[in-house]
Length: 383
Ligand SMILES: [Zn+2]
Image (cartoon, rainbow, N blue to C red):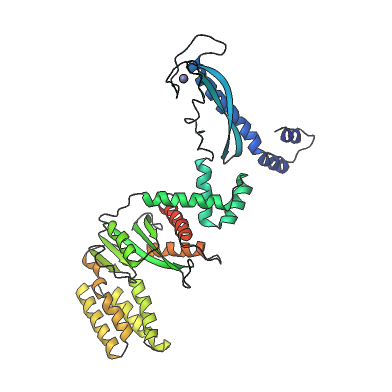
């Protein structure tokens, strides 16, 4: 504090240097202010509970002795706690009293003012660390926090915070009763398998502002098809819009295949059927026409079936099977008036997942799952 004051009162000042100096020493400067506020607050309370200083009249306190339950105390100085917050690491006082009956010493206000033994890092600082780590690598987050907030923490500490937060999110009850759920998955480079693992994400999406749809996070997880289906069933959704990679029958009363995926996947199956590249476009175009430019459901389904027959006649068997499997789920949105026939709300989040995860490392499966779980939850439910 002194050095800054000296710099400030020098003959010449430059505001930039001044600001820099104050910023650099803010932990000491602001820490002093916080110290005095915290101390005077406790002293005011102590005056009401114990009586004025040097006064021998015995007052009945609002708290009682943890050992004997007595209500009469005398002041016994103060202790100090280190507290790490957005202001940096500061040393704060907690006043102490002694029980007049049993002699037990304790700090009566520490829990109420947020300085309990377990409260060493401020919740705001933890949130900021988490938010930053969701965006950039652990090490970069650590460097940023150190330079912006003057608080040093290790990548490992942040990692532990992520794991803890992820576990809390998992314990939260989640339901999507009578809602339409979007489900999709993406591969991330994690675990021992060459192609990595699939991250499954489920959200609900409602119209919000013009550009921004209001999304609600439901779950993000890795796991077997059976486990994913179980997670979807628990939601008790009215319907699920999905990409067709898994058979989701039984997971919700209504199922709708994502029409964008259906077309996109057809290109892949036409390639598997050995159809030359230049001959694939007309098929794709025809399917788009059937799915998007046929207003009546009956007519749409009729055209769709004759398209499947055409594929079969032309020997495009993989493509034929692909479309035939999807047939019961192509027009649910029209038949039941549900909103949305693509997984696009979740697709946007998938790109965000890939951006954070593709940083040239191979992740551990729990590591990547926990980080992405916190990230998605923060982005949608806790922005
Ligand atoms: Zn006592």
